Length: 125
Image: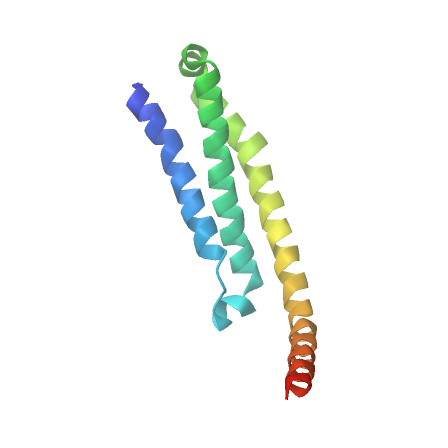
């Protein structure tokens, strides 16, 4: 495997992960806000792509000779089951909890902000 191929294998997941993270970090639409599970899966996928790409890039940069020599189908599956899947599930679960808490706290925060703005308007008039 050439060096360009290895960098392509590592750079593409990193860029895709960053793209998904930036897309999901914006304010969600009403339909997306109601579907917390899909939002958390997308966030978990973006984080997983980014982290697994960075891990592979780090391992290649630390020892390029042994990285290429040790790469086999068995090591790829081992990496997928022992690293990638736990990162995905932890990231998706964390995102789901974050979105659930945010959706529950949003109406109270909106009401409090509305009271602050009304109080400020009455004081400045």
